[in-house]
Image (cartoon, rainbow, N blue to C red; front, top):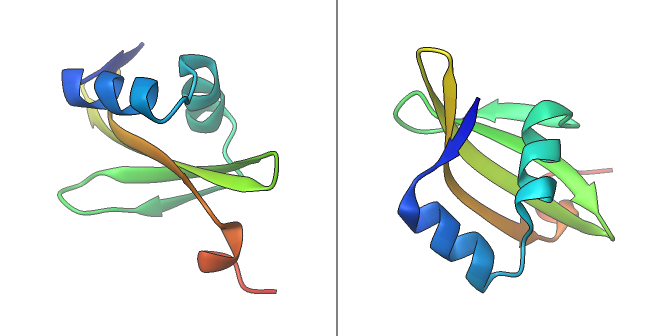
Length: 78
């Protein structure tokens, strides 16, 4: 199950990111890295932008903390 903190819901709405994109990123990422405080950061590219989704796991639930788009070159060197 995937849930969202209120702050995360506000952010994705403001940033024009759909919940579908967030959930696709969590379920089928191109990469997952460790974040702060036992959080994970899932990466997926949509339309030449890297979507980063920060989430934490509590029992069987994944809770989205934040999500934002950025330039993939910032995180992936070629």
